[in-house]
Length: 191
Image: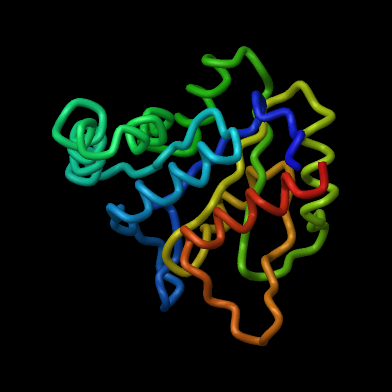
């Protein structure tokens, strides 16, 4: 059972700055399924806010259209529980703007926690990270990247790194939706 203090756990999906396959810094596209699936996983695990970070106006408008459909449009009649999940979604231009908004909303220090499919030095296990979140009164922003990984300029802002998800095979290419759900489950599993 998850007994983590969910009042201090937040997540963000970073669309810029991230790497493409060649190692260039790019902005990736927001997808409808990421909005739906990650918000549902976040709501299930008691996450207070799910931020989508993109500087592109058309992408922000796309997110707003999706949210409007489920919060005020036909979607609210078609599937009322989806509204509950997408109500925690916010769109921000930058990670710095997200941290500022979260700090202003909570009045707390914000710790940035980086997730990655690649191992890094000083990674905490999900158990240790979950315990740290559960025992703290500070805010923790769990950051998920898109594309081919989070840019180094963002990595430098991290307070913590959480271990990569490893399955039972050498294949290691989960969708970000799956990675978010598994990470949230593992962070909560130990508390």
